[in-house]
Image (cartoon, rainbow, N blue to C red; front, side):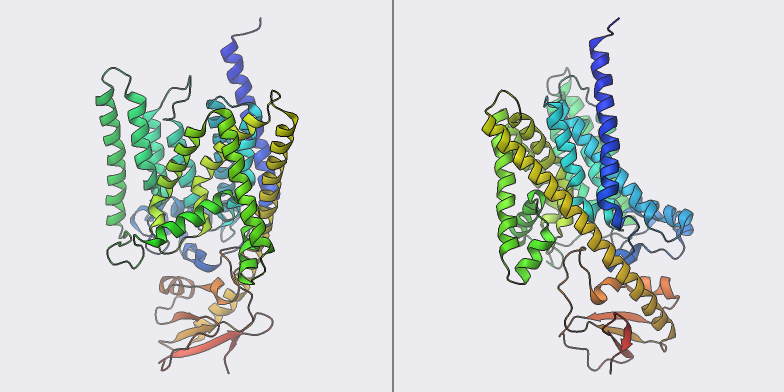
Length: 487
């Protein structure tokens, strides 16, 4: 017996996806290994919980970190700290598992649009090795992003018009709810999901009624999330005042930054530091490499006859990023949310250009671009992971000293931390030096020291110091990164 061909095909596909999951997990462990037990630094400290067991019961009724409402992240972090203490390894392993699942989901999606297995595997591999994964997986305050992106992408997948794949609107709505309770910017998925609902049901009997019903379900999920967020004390950025976001040139600037971050294969850390030092070799090389990747995506899309799909993916990516484009400042970390769209385009371009029915020159050129994009991203990811680990190590050592000082300060004191001159420039989460690594809110000072009457202020190198400053006690760093009183 040869078996039922569709059954055999499904088994073969399942075996491929299982093999990809194992390979992606091992590769992720190798590339991100340095940061998998990386310590807290910068704004991570808001997820250092003084009583994690107690927080488990109130995760859905409290805003954290800061005024953000991300209860699923808070719940998982609290569970980790309850069961395993202060080690960040469990949280990072969950983050890695979410990232691997996203890579497998992208592989399955590329197979769904009829691309070759080679193209599908390369698409998943692109997700796996992307340098965007360093901050997303290696961060201590980023499970909201990895979980939100995976759940939002799964919602899109369950409504995508793949041949032979039954749409699952109920599963899509549930996944959308998970994405929202992971990260507030997942509201950007709502318009795309509503459109897919209409496209899916339009040809069915009573399709309009079904489309309206399921669209209202999605809207109810969003409204329910916003209501719970408001009840917990969460706030939405105020566009009217312009304090956190506005509609202006910042939108185009943010869009340009995140677009470049989503396609550049060379390490953005080197590109930024080169620009900061006015040494232009890395910035120029980075710009040219991003252009090469975009050209590859367009070339493959034309070859595959999917240029309209590429345009649709670009529009969808902008929609997903919409809630963050209005912010005054964005990090390249946000580009992780559109990584699945870029990887899909990368996979079908590779599948179209590496086929044997084309010229040898085309195949060699395409293979060279694929090899460069994947290897450069993998190298950048590993370097960024090492940088984050170093930042966490330095911040942890400094925090121990700072907490001792805070506990011994007189009543109603303000610890003013003054960065010494000569510090190297900071960049994102990959290089955090000086006192930026021990940035503490009033709440965190209370939780970590038990004192309500002391606070912390940070003064950058060369900044004017507060004068007069009642209760201020000034500290700086010596040449061995030790906290010392200022003379």
